[in-house]
Image (cartoon, rainbow, N blue to C red; front, side, top):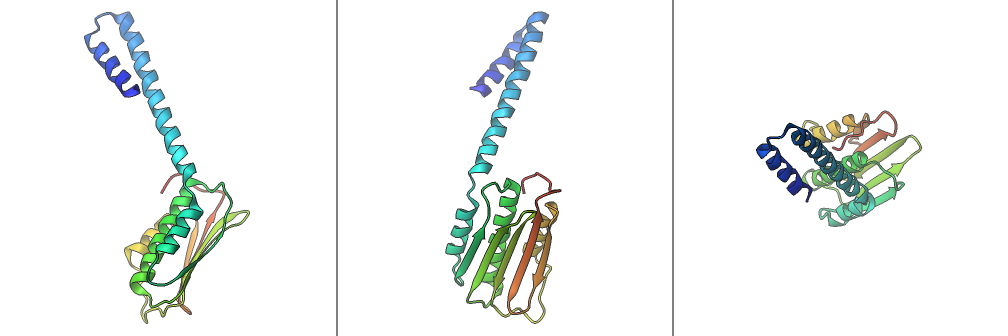
Length: 177
């Protein structure tokens, strides 16, 4: 309905010859555009709040087919959307990497919330390659996502493969990834 009103207002502005009415139509058009932007923002915020991080991670762990994945989830309810998106993307990529590159028969995903940070650990018991390659796009994307949230990422290859990530709660950019 707002889109229709915006279009009608534009059409009226086009055929209008009266300067006083033109000024009112300009204000009306600005108000309608502001209302449209506010509604878009509200819908976006509702979507971000509706993302259930635990359910999504449980689904990813259950759907992983190359080996069983245990999920250890200890997070609060008010996880910012950008952190949720970051964690989901990294877990997806890590489980994909386990399927493609690991001989693991067990994997664990641990997500924890601490007073000052969020923590993610993904590990498997596979045998890492003799010459691990850290230049793949998947790992680079993980590093970029973590860097955008001012976090740290560490990769270990002793007794399997492990990715350990911390994301601070303060000094974060509040942008979706």
